Length: 423
Image (cartoon, rainbow, N blue to C red; front, side, top):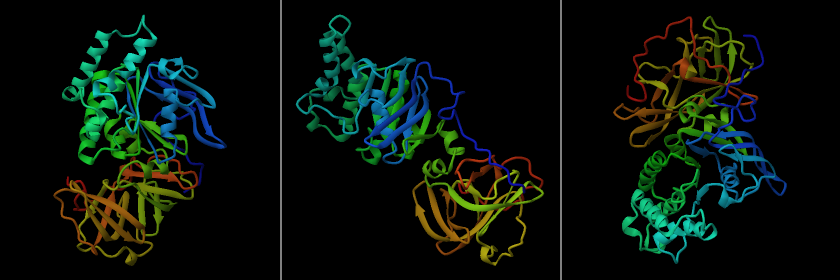
């Protein structure tokens, strides 16, 4: 195969792209840079948060998620660049005049005030400082009543924060934010203090709340389940920059680089270093214990091959010989990826089981659906991944390359196996 410069692919508008259209009713970062001392913690060339979207910002600790949220709220001033809300430049606008409400990770409730007093606090300040246009007492009372009814706080209105559970305090924090009817609602890891069962309930409530309010919501989290299940728009950040943005399903299925591939999704994507070779079907990718046939051509000399744990067809171990005993010149059985391994760890997670395998290809993981017989530790298995489920990345840059799916010269043989998802 000839070596040509790789063609990176991304999903959605690329930060800084001249073709990226602004969001007329959403939030726009335009060349926003924020530094603390000599360290740059936020560097966003361009990011458009769509109007009325539920945008989830996800990334590792210290990647700039919360800093970006605070810049939108006006609690931090960028060193350079502009922030626009609804098309209006609000970079120098005070926080109280931006039409933004923020829910903090620790809820920040006033301990000496009751639930309804906490919820009404912002409205009362607005009425005090803006007597002409601010809400009157009757409107404040009605808004508080509506917010309490929406979030199930009607019976807790007379209690103080010390008399509430963590989930109830979380709902009070949300009520205090939404009662102001903000154009943009900012949520800084509001579910991190809740237990697993309450988190699941709160996720559904937040999605329902967004549907009822119809405003723009930006939620920051490090939890990938929250990111993939709640958002209509996903932003993945790394080292202060936007790595990829788009619909959650697109980001998961077509990661822009190896960072997104390994960060988004659990288990993380399996990656193997391979070398392209000529093949009638387009190209053969070969590595230690790895053989794959793809339809692509013109790949660089070194490629990183990826596949999701739930995208393989796991075969029973009967009649499968160890990968180390296969002749090195044996041709692949057909388009797609075939590899073998020895089961080292079995993790039962409830709805599925994750098997950890080791072999010549290194360590890899596969997900086996409920109701499917799981091989035992120590058994040798073979796994096959169809070409449309494979991902190719440039080893040098980490960027995604042309998809390996497409017309192939050889038919896919019947393996007689079972899909990990039980189908």
